[in-house]
Length: 257
Figure (cartoon, rainbow, N blue to C red):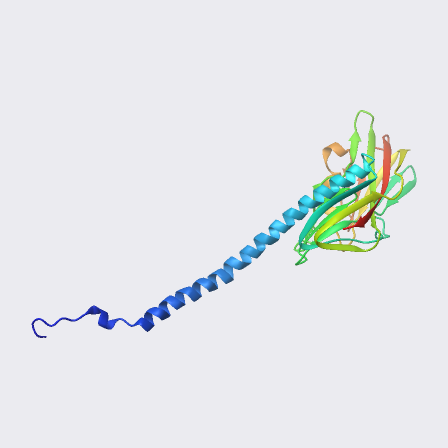
């Protein structure tokens, strides 16, 4: 090399190599977002939809209590159904869900249900006999009661008070998006008092199994019931035979969703 010759380090740099490196980084970033970020975003949106529907069910449950315990004949509430479908059948399943044995008499009840099914079918939220329940497809026999029905046990008077609420509809209804849930009492409520109650049994529907949720509810200390060991899809509780039992029956028709 002659004295005074100058070599530039830029002579070894290729613009093509730099472009390929940057493009590879961009593609890798997009792939990482698609692989991890997008599913997480979708899952978060699904969780938000489920939480919103739980809140909607609490509102509808409050309207149902206004119809039953407060004697209001008609209720309507606007709700938004996202990430799934809200539905109700015209007639309840004819198979009894509840059986109450009182002094040799068996009282049966078919409550019907208003239910929300998520878009991917993984989650169900239902309003059944005044209680809000949920279950996940990943555990078909598992369920949780999010809000209790209006049942109670008066220890002073040794009296059980049980509300039997039947939900039916003007026709098979379903709703996705913004709609209005309109409900009314289709028949005058009735109240009957019985003596010497012995047991109450919940029969789970194989397609909508909420037995575990009802079992846990029956076992609450303030309800005065003693659950037996479950038999199949049934759970039976012993009642105090010296107590009185007041059954209040309500028939509610859902006019629209």
